[in-house]
Length: 173
Image 1 (spheres, one colour):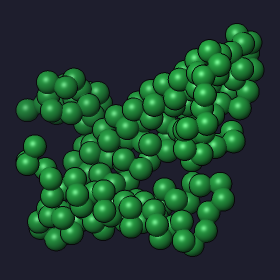
Image 2 (cartoon, rainbow, N blue to C red):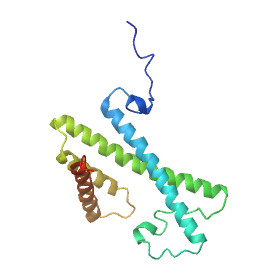
Image 3 (cartoon, rainbow, N blue to C red):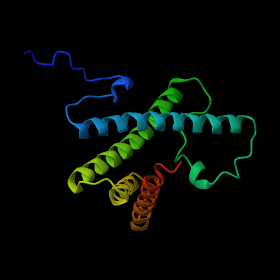
């Protein structure tokens, strides 16, 4: 019998149930979650900037948008000014990449934690989701520029609440 390593591929299509085969279900799950969420993060970052650019160029009123969304250079591409110069493109790529990695890391971490907790406890329930969400939320809060103890706790509680709600609502809708 010959080894099936020759026929194995790192990348798979959606028809085989996953994007990757890294040899272990935990690694497959983390990498798939990372790639999918990173793509979503990139699309979200570019779409947000496109909206604000279009809104500013048409003289739209952005005063009704909450400050946590429009924060000063917090979520904006700082060097992108509607120009087609090299600096604008570099700012777009850098900012989109940073946000993609943040989304990917959060998704990969959450997915890996829920899988690990399921394997360790032998059951997949809301408790696994709550703990994974809390840890992921706390870790994600550490990427904030100006963080405090209260923000870390708030992000942990928010992560736990969102992931628990998602787990409990699975199958209802």
